[in-house]
Length: 399
Ligand SMILES: [Ca+2]
Ligand SMILES: [Ca+2]
Image (spheres, rainbow, N blue to C red):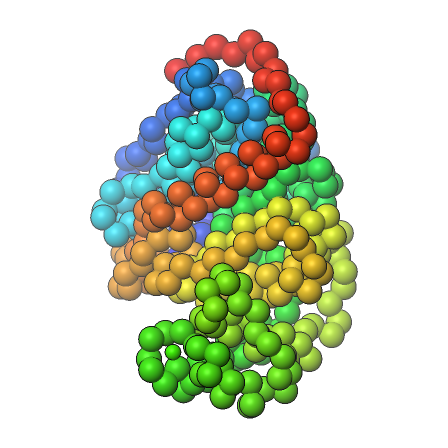
């Protein structure tokens, strides 16, 4: 997994946060701007007096659904487009993953809400587009709460017609919002971070060993374990139980096998002294989703070693809680941004070596998967709740 060492990007306590503010080629590249057929600006002010700006983007009239998606970027703050600076992207072009997601959602008729998580008139950002006044984690929670309140205040969709889509620590913030708003209809965890407490090294060892076992057992080398091949693995495992065939294809893939291994050895990865709440008083996201049975999609890249641990364990937690509607998907050879990665030092004229690789943009098939999942949930809920009427919004295009 690529790590980035610019100070602002390190504030996320080890989270590789490369979808940060603008490019290192000095002139900050501005994103594509408002994408809706109509756009409503929103603003909120934090306790510290910092002001944040965002926007609600409205799809074209003919395709508009009475559902919205709130996008929560990663790290301690991203720009509104989750901009991947040119210097950190594979193509050398700045990429705008948040805008890419917003556009795909708008095309399917969803109202989209996103915000600039770099405060208005941030003096550090004004001086250096790789830097920002980074809030604390607790302040990030406050901002997410204020952003949701500012969105709801505009009455564009019903209060509980808002799906959450969070990347990395944005996924953790989405979990906090779900704890406080259990009626929200669903969440997408895109490489969600800090979702579940564990002994990370022990979990990584189990994941590593599972990969070795898998290779040994896969005698025909097709990358999947047939029932016969899996029998051999089971003999060496204490649980002896049937592995969960998550994708129901009749065979066991490496991730199904890994979850099986984690399930068989909870004493190794479980944190004995883990409290039910984190030091900010929030429940762990995996527990919130397990309790409320919030429909959940988790997507993560196979190169994203650290957060694969949390996603595997969250999937296991939900399975064991009998959660009726969650999906978990690992994308091979993609990293934390759900994008391809290439290794190699990235040097910035002012900051020196700032990263050990480049990534992005986000893969279109992952975008498609997330949008289709949200669409299916919205349609299912519509069928269950009966006819949904679209509230008049009185919006005007501010493009
Ligand atoms: Ca095989
Ligand atoms: Ca399978």
